[in-house]
Length: 319
Length: 201
Image (cartoon, rainbow over all chains, first blue to last red; front, side, top):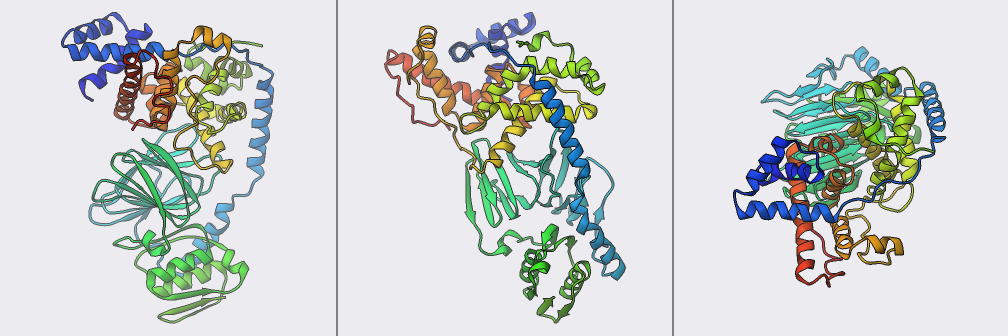
């Protein structure tokens, strides 16, 4: 924090009358050190004086309080009645995969409750967050949970692919290098590019990206670039591979429609995956894959959804 | 009917203890003290007029639903504003509108009421218009500091930013606003519409 930036808040406290004697003395000494310092004080003083807010004068109708309590009670009751739809597929899938022993779950993962997740310097790693969301951290990446009253908040260093458990009352947000990405439930990728800009790519759902200069919303298949200065741009991406372009490669699904998962598996392996039937295409799966071969991945998808599979080296039909 | 003041509230720890005990009178105190201030704050986040009242109510509903989990060391005021901000952002998303990169710009001299005109200087109107032209995040930071009297630390808690980022953004806001005011003063206060379409970066 440079001198004048650090002093701004003290100047404000002096102007507001909330500075103590020591702070007021410090500002006075600083102001007399140079004409530039005095000019800064006068600049802040002018702005502060001319932007003094109107006092809050309107009455508050306290009859709203019982309505708040009642609405809160109803919402809590509704939440308890709602089935845990996220688990509807995750649990059968885990059970199926465990039973057929494809080894899909055997590579690095960690479900120990914690606040900080760090991938080794030379390999990426997958973690399950406390809300059931998956995160795949690139080598050397670090993700830290930050306590927040009403959202799932994390700070990211490095690159990560997220598959977020849906919870409309508890948004999921990731801060990385001065940009915030906020979602309800989706899959998205955050990374820093060599020029210092940040990229957010959305595979599924919608996210909101904000930087110091504003914000925008991204939908599935869209990619946002945030320049080092904070300016935001976005573009559509036709090839899903552009969004999944990890050097090491990984597939991460969270409550993802099988049809969408099949498209990504197709791209990932350079093979063709056909899913027959509307119901099957809309079935949702939760899983991650790293080094498993094409056949094993397709077989696990089939086992999890109860479908029949025909698989060759370059073609799979799920029906 | 009641007009409360945050200054008259019991200490944060007592409010939290009472909320833990389902004491609705603690909620009443908070509503009386903060409702109007939260409405003003939320109105600055929503990109259209209206709707702030519902958002503030939503924030208090969330507060009441989480009353037994409340356990934090920061400022309760910052916590409440965080709830309101998140509820406002959710409302903006739910309404299907794209996020406004720059909120509506209030015309600097667009027909103030006689009462307002009597107490508001031309320079003051220019200052408020200039605040609305600040980039969204910077404007939000400035308003929390100026309108709500938040410390930089409290702002960093509400917006989830580092202290350094808050300080930098405030510094830039103060510099930009001063430049606008200084320019107006140099022009003998006749530049009332000057810069209305400009945008600070």
